[in-house]
Image 1: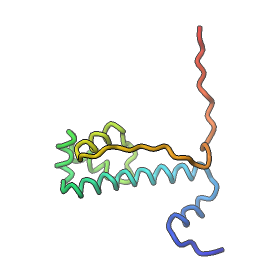
Image 2 (image 1 turned 180 degrees about the vertical axis):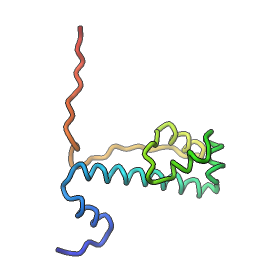
Image 3 (image 1 turned 90 degrees about the vertical axis):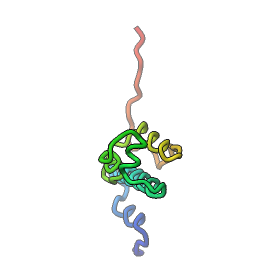
Image 4 (image 1 turned 90 degrees about the horizontal axis):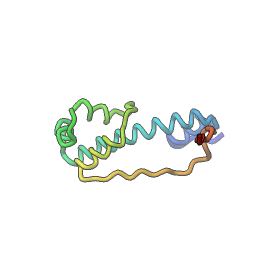
Length: 112
């Protein structure tokens, strides 16, 4: 077995083919990336958390939470407010994966 050379290779080896574990890692990676993006944009704009909070119409602790990689409560509405305050726009993409993580029954409407 060859030695893994990157963090992503190590993670892929550890996860294996477990779809639930893959989903969890993807979710945590997304949370960390969003938090880092908010932090990076704020710092590049030369703003403190308090200054960004005032521009967004919220408080400094809210910005601190949003910049925490462990935070799971990102709302699209708040991300848009942050983007507006920083002169940016949000770009959301749905990307192909290996397949659905699990099959869900399709919702059916019942006409009466």
